[in-house]
Amino acid sequence: MIPQELKNILTSNTQVMSGAVCFSGTRVPVQALLDTLDGGESVRDFLGGFPDVTPQQALAVVHWEQTQARHSFGIETVE
Image (cartoon, rainbow, N blue to C red):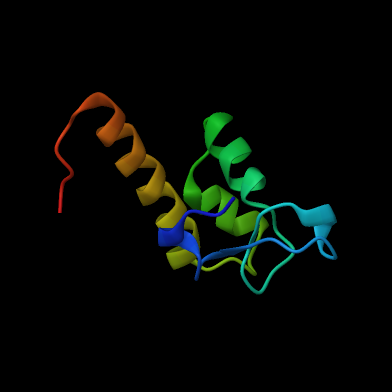
């Protein structure tokens, strides 16, 4: 399920990448970004490997994840 905040950034279609959540306008799954970051690489590294994804798309996902973590830990969101 795609969070409301990311509906214009991500998409899922059973006809594309077996329904994996992908960056809109691409066939790049969001899992690729998460795996890149989990591997210690940067958003810049990810974008170098997936030029169809815009920096704004990748950073929106990162920002959303950070916001979710802040809410979970009761930390104020930085604006």
